[in-house]
Structures are given as C-alpha cells and as structure tokens.
Image (cartoon, rainbow over all chains, first blue to last red; front, side, top):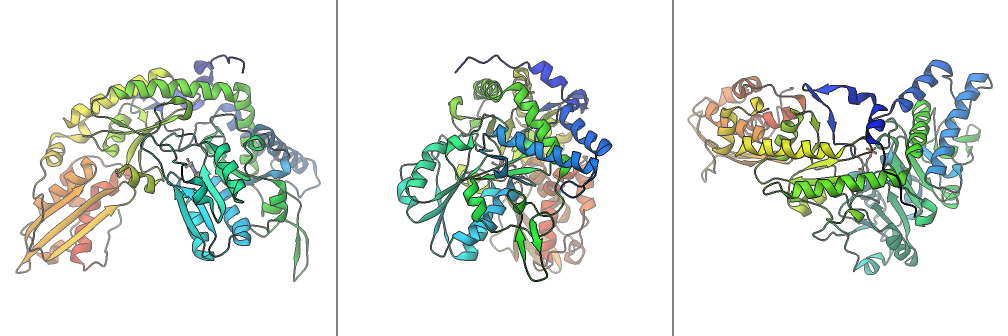
Length: 411
Length: 128
Ligand SMILES: Cc1ncc(COP(=O)(O)O)c(C=O)c1O
C-alpha cells in the first residue's frame, strides 16, 4: 500500500461548527465519538438544503421537486454502496440505525430460517443491540445461544470455534468492539462459519466510520451500521445483505413503498431494496448520510484509520503512566480501534466523567451497552475515551491531566 | 473543579457513616442502578414504630455512596410512618450541590431504596 499522507486535523476541525463552542468555560474536548460523532457543515447543510429547496415525498410524486428528492435519496444509497464496496445499491437497505438493521434480519431472515435446536453463535463482547434481538429470536423459535469468550487482552478466543459452529445457523459478532476497541478477525471467523454452513452477520457500527470496509471482500452475509457515528445524522442506518438473501427474505414491515400491487386480501412486494423500506423514509437523513460519505471519502478511510491508530497508540502510552490505572482491550494498535476503556482504583467512572466534564472533556462512563462484558471484566462500569478525525494528540494530554486532577480530589 | 465534590461529600464517601450490616435487621432491602452499576443495601431495625438502627452497604460512585451515608444519619430514630414518605428533596438539600439530571439516579438511589423497603416492596418511587 502507498504510504498515506497524515490528515490535517486543524483544517478538519474547522469543518465542524460544534468546536467553536465552550463547555464549562473551556473549549470542547470531545472524546465520545464511539457513542455518536460530531457533524461537519457539509452534512448539516445538505439536510437544510433539502428542507429549504426540494422537500417532497420521494418515490411518489411526478413533479419536479419530488423527483429531485428521489434522485438525492437514491444517490445517497449509491454512495453508501460504493463506500462499502457493495456489488449493487439494491443491496443497501436504509433503516433507522444498526439496531433496526439487526432486528430486520432477526424478524425477516431469522424467523424464516432459524428452527428449534439450531444454534446462534455470538460473542461476549456484543453491544446489547447484537445480543438482545437474538435472545428474543432464540426464545421465540427455541434456538440455542452460544458464545465466543474473550481472553485477558480482550481478543476473541477462537480455539473452540469449530466445535461451537456445529449446528449453528448464524454467527453474529461485532467488527470492532465499542468497549474494548478490539478489531475482530472477520474473514477468519466467516470462513470457518461458512465451512460449517452458518451465515454471518457483522455489526459494523464501530468499523464503517473508522476504516475502509469492503463487504464483498470480507465474504460475510449481513452487515449493519449507523449513520450518526460516521459524521451523518441520527435516524438513518444501513443493512447490507447479499442480494440472493434479500430476494428470498420476507418483508420486515408492511406499508407504503414496500409494495408493488395491493388488493384487499393480499399484496406483492416491491423490488429490492424498497421491499424492506415501508413508509416515508428518513429523506433528509439519507441525504445527510450521503454527504457524510462524501466527506469521509474526501479524507480517505485509510488516512482516517492511520490517524486514529496514532491517537490510540499515544493514549495507551500516556494512560499507562496514570497510577493504578487498568486498561482494557488489546495493547497492539494494529487490532485496537479508536476507543480506549479504563478504570481507576480510587475514582468511580461516573465521578471521573463528571470531574473531567468540568474541564470541558466529554468521555463516557458506564457499561457502554455491554453489560455481559462488564461482568467478564469484573467491573460495574468503565470510563471510555474514543477518537475520531477531529481529535488532536494534545487532547489526550488534556485528558490525562484531568484524570490526575480527579485522582487528587479523591486521594 | 471540585466544588461538586465538596469536603463533606468526599468525607462521607471515604468514611461512610453507619456502614456495615445488621444481623438482626427487620428489613433488608437492596437497590441498584443497572445503568451505572451503583448498589446500596439498607439494613433497618425497627423499634416501637421508629427506626431503631440502620446500616448500609454499597458500592458505586461518590454521589450514590455519600448520599446513602448522609441518609442514614438523617433517618435514624425517626417514626417509620414519616420515613415512608421521606422527601427526596430533603436528601438533595443535605447533599448541597447541584445534581445534573444524568446524576440524579445516583443521588436518589438510597432514598428510593428506603421507600421500597418501608412500603413493603411496593415501590412508591417519587418523581424527580
Ligand atoms: C458495536 C455497536 N453496535 C451497535 C450499536 C448501536 O447503535 P445504534 O444505537 O445507532 O443502533 C453501537 C452504538 O451504540 C455500537 O457501538
């Protein structure tokens, strides 16, 4: 690969209006992009522009502004398809977020294909969004849940993968852990799953915003992510699935737009992807997501990843020196994405988050929607700093200073 | 930076009052905030319609644990009939700091647990 030029953080920061504001009298240091990212002007403007100039219901009108709205919305779908290297935009189903994407698969594919006694293989590090839907499906059809566990470095233990794959219909796991930062070996797990006859769903919520993702190359079957974590707005997410799967799957929700022909007693379904998009979609949000993809492409995903890798390396190095700190997740930045979780012996994560907020620093404290993982780590909660394109190494220094200040309060 | 964690709160957190268990408690009630993992268990010994003695155990953030410690000081010796309706605002006043909405569940964990304990498990949880 060609050596990539480092990104210009200061110029990127100027694209994000939120960084002009102060919090508690201090400039905002935003270290919670794993929860949701900030939005650049281009994304905000694209949505404004839709509402101001061509607001109309897409797919329905034959007049000019409805056609403009349809074109903009469908062009966003094309951008997303290209962004994750999906073979066709017909495989891009817009949802509200990744949670809805996973639930779509649960209701549509899951109910039609998972039977009593089948196994669904998950991991101990899943976000509740990729755990609870499968608990519900398993209960409904009488399937069994099984789990891949982690080692002390926060990596999935794969030594018994083949045994656990026996009788599995589906393997569902996260591409990158939102709590540990671990980047999972998607290809290796997928190959083993396919050898065993199971399909693979990957939760890409923490991957698509932060690294180049090629769904075709990964060889997976289902992939989901949320727009709001990748510079886009809330209210729009994506399910990608292989076309043959989508063709065979029954609809998820019924209503307008998802039908071809409706009679009193029955209906036939629209073509892909609209078969899975009932009702008026989130038009502005779809357009905003398209603008977010444009923005990220303008930077280049390899450079995004390289920047975050630098930040994670620096953060792990600096945080290591904080007295008594416990760091979670891999020490190797090659497999550690832009989120760093830690705990301190004398300061509870909530107290820490409140104290650093006084310095204008936003970090996350809690279980990060991964309660089973907290149990495994033996803590009720952790603190988490997560990074994105607009974060400076100096912000890591500010965080470390604020942590040390907080420790003084509690000593 | 530390006005939120004024001396008195830190003091209660580091050296909690009435910390421990009552082996002969009449009522033992655990309360938790699954959201942040704070836990408080109250041990209540009743004496002739009054709260004779109280102990608590818990773990969690300074706000949740200090407020539990303060609460035990405030309630011991008082009539149970009164404590069934112990006002959250009294405890918040005693804490004496501005509690943000996100931290309100921490600050009120102990008093909510008290209300559940005295109302026979039927949570009469006051709106915040
Ligand atoms: C790994 C992972 N999966 C799923 C989700 C859920 O995302 P959303 O709430 O946007 O559906 C998140 C983020 O909260 C996440 O980090």
